[in-house]
Structures are given as structure tokens and as C-alpha cells.
Amino acid sequence: MTLSEDVLAARISVDLSMQVPPLAQIRQWLATVLADLAEDLLQDLMLVCTELVANAYDHACAPRRLRVLRSSDHQALRIEVDDGSPDSLPVTGKSRLGAFRGRGLIMVDTLSRRRWGTYSGTECKTVWAELPLS
Image (cartoon, rainbow, N blue to C red; front, side, top):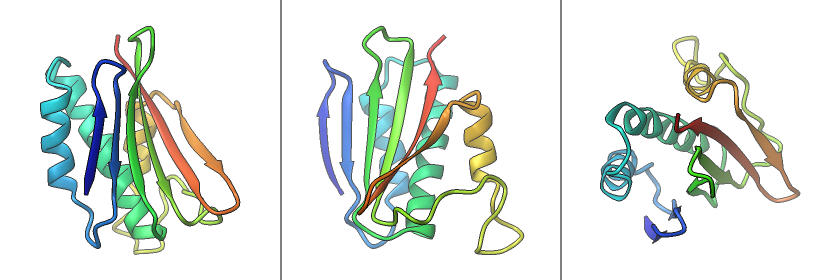
């Protein structure tokens, strides 16, 4: 996992080249870098980030990257996760991994107040969500 951060511009980027998703490391890193956030918002951010990263590992192929961006007006945080599977689009409430799975995007949908989606290119896709700061 390679970290790159520009806290002044509020752009945080994580190269997810590891074989296993580094979810605990991502949570620890976010807590350090974004320590100025209210605790409940930080917990929501960690949950959304780990859900989107876990989905990229479970349902898509490499390369993968996580970005967290603070809007210029400081009213929202945007989480973006890229992966190398542009044709594998997320489906809320369903998982090919079994009936006991598929609830992660429901949580993302709720925490982001339905402000999430995907962008697909020819070689990759980005799944994004925005968390309001107020």
C-alpha cells in the first residue's frame, strides 16, 4: 500500500497493490490524516472507505486505488475507489458471494444520503460516494 497525501489540498490517495485489502491500515491512516473530523463523521468515512475497498477486492480485479477528497468549500468528503473491472458494476443489496453478503452498498447509500455512483471507462471504473460534512 503506497500512500500519498496533500492535506492542505485535502487530497489523499492510496495505491492498493497488495493482494489482501489493507482495511485496518486504511482506517488507522484515515484517523490520523483526518483527525480534525468529528468522531461520528470519521467513523462513517472509515465505514464507506472500507466497504468500497472491500468491494473492489471481492468483485473486481487490479489495479485498485482509493482517493479521499475534501471539497473546496469544505462541505463534503468524496471517496473514490478505482478498479480494473469496468464491466462489473455494483448492485445494491446483492452479492455473488452468497446470501449473507450484499449489505455494504446499502450502508454506503444510507451514509452518503444516496450520493454515490460509478464512472466506467474502457479499462477501469470508479465507484464514488460523497459524505456531507454538515
